[in-house]
Length: 407
Length: 231
Image (cartoon, rainbow over all chains, first blue to last red; front, top):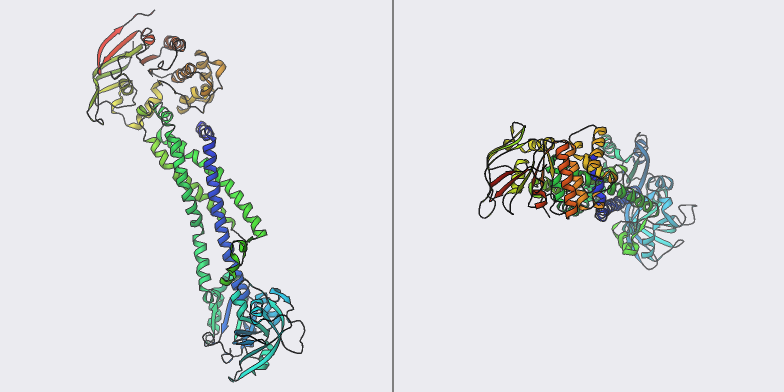
């Protein structure tokens, strides 16, 4: 108990130095957690945007469709297959689509696009498309011309707006070119400008009539109840439908998959590296405090205090500082991350507007798992103890007879 | 009287210097229980080295130090820590105390390391601080005490655990005359009352004048060993 008392009082005999150590630890934890939270926030947002708003958890295609996205490569009995998949217990929503590449033209511009014929209700349940429409309506009423929902970026490129007419040109099932006029009913917005520029949505009924096959399906998008089952379910679907290509989101977005995997495994090391930097500062400060106390430590050892206790006392002093600094850092970073998670960090002011070109949002919502905070706490205490070991070792190497005469 | 310390052919040569230094040369001495001895001599005569060796803070190159029938020169370092804790009291030149502990806590510290019961520790610490005239400074930390008062606390600490003997390395070196006399009076009284063996290294004539035995070292060897009747 006396040793605890000595350690505690030793900490506060030079309160300015102890506060510097505590602040260094707080800043280390804050910096580590915040940078981890930003990265995790960005990646999870990216996952949400890319997987949940764009590719969905699993997609099925005719094997040739991936290289040649044409109406010709349809899934045989696509609607029946979609119906069967929707019965799978792990599956939440299934959206059968007719998808192929074509051209979109306005009065004075044209561009290559991917045309997606969808069931409006199922598509909203799958990719939330209905809620991503930022101006106009989402397939409200059939008008004189069939409706099309385009990305805002595509509308800007074609120099059109809600209510404008555009002409879509594509091949029908027989390979003949077909052109048809559509009225822009709504514009959607997602973070990826590339996706907005390239993808437009029409009713599958309208599209099927134009290509000459009322039941054509070239793509089936599947959303699962629990995303973590994606490998298991896609494997089962592949076994059930060996002639159809079944791909899960990680196959379709490998860079996103590896980025998330790397992040999960290495997030703690990001913080660890920051704390390692702090630890060297810590080591230096503790060493200084030991060297200032050479005579005192010599006296303690001369009168019979064992080396193990002297070692323990110095390590304990640092551990107390690490616990104070670590706890303060955790509480502060928890509060800050929570606040910014509600409010969002707008990086547009720092040139983040261009992030959309790479599929990233310009407003980041930092987030961190609770377990991570505890991992950080352990890393801090571990590094602090390590940082204190060298000065403590130096202390017990002192020769009492020499140390007591130190001026 | 019982022999507390006995040295046989004690020699110490420092070889970590450019030229080997013979700090102690063949010293054979005995110290009896209750003696008040001053080790005197000019600077570099080996006083501190002698105290360090008989206090188990340093090892002799040759010879042995018998305390309580044990040759401490052959002990392992960890055994020496225990031995010092149980048998020897130390008073150093200055800044002896643990700055973050109060006077009472400082005096209790050795007893705490010896794992004595708390009540006994507190009682003995208060008793010793009263003996050295600091009963009004029980809860005061060293930085609020004068140099003389700090040395009195150090003496109280050295004696509180009732060691076999107390080694004091120039305890009055940094004290003014009044404080030095005050400290010496206290030590002389405790030497009698508690029958504790006191061995000082000093070149302070005030200490020498109080000692009942004065051993003079010159160049690491015993030059004179004189007894005085101070009563």
